[in-house]
Image 1 (tube, rainbow, N blue to C red):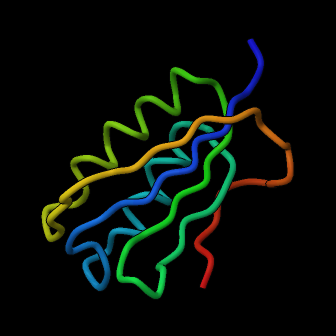
Image 2: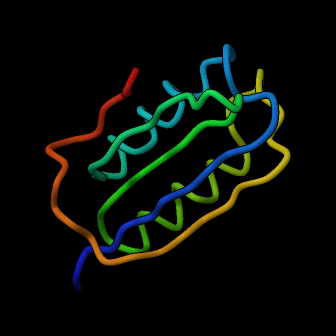
Amino acid sequence: MEDERLHATVRGSVQGVGFRYFVLTAARSLGLAGSVANRHDRNVEVIAEGPRVNLLELLRLLHEGPRSSVVKGVDAEWNEATGEFDGFDVTF
């Protein structure tokens, strides 16, 4: 199977609540590559690449978030993987 790319924007109370580190831990445990970052509009942006089944699990987790967050919605786009990432990191 070829890797795919998930580009997601998570909306809600998702900054200052450990959301990026929640995503970092989940993505690394799923063996995904990519990044997570806070955006100026108070949303969180996630770019992840890997097997679709693992990306679907990450997407499910993005809808939940950590206990301290309130996720109001997740916008997701699917594309071909670019292979530009080496591991998964938080971008500041």
